[in-house]
Image 1 (cartoon, one colour):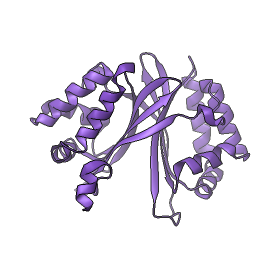
Image 2 (cartoon, one colour):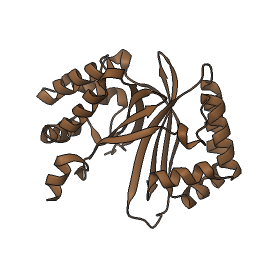
Image 3 (tube, helix red, strand yellow):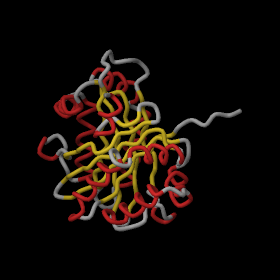
Image 4 (cartoon, one colour):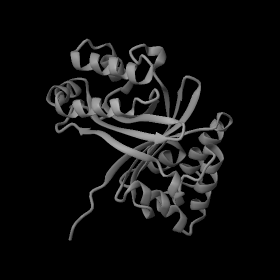
Length: 258
């Protein structure tokens, strides 16, 4: 019998300016008061890992979400409509509130193109890992150039990049191009061994050709110089669950470990 392999997805949902606190309240409640039913729900829709982040960049607020599941993202999100659990209605209602649209509707499923998917093939020697998902909006008509850049990233620079990523303690990178009505985004999930801010800072200060090219290309594609620490997105982890370890943050995680 063929066993389905889990697939990773990362996408962005712009948040209404006055709904940031409601977004935080939603994920806090999902991981505390509704933790038990959330666990059942996430398993029922075929998810094995869910992380949610609040990103603030240039005065805009985004939900950036990382999902691992056994189904296509479209199937995972649309399954919400067929699950007879109060928590499914809770998720539907609250997403409508802070995003302003029904994310489970076929026309609103995140439109993603996978650009880069890499995981280190050897251990870094550190047990602690940190993760972050963030999104950066592209300048108009830069999507094709972004795709060409990531194609070179995969092909021409791959061997050098793998070694340098390992040296800098990056252990997973997932990059998507997401098309939205207001424009195109690069959405990335990064996992590191050790403190993620220290790792990111080391990469951004690096003079290695591959990293210099990456920073220059991002500035050309987005108009944002990510080498300047003041331009780095501020990202806050709101929710972290997996089918293996349950909840890692909030009261539910503390209760599980007590």
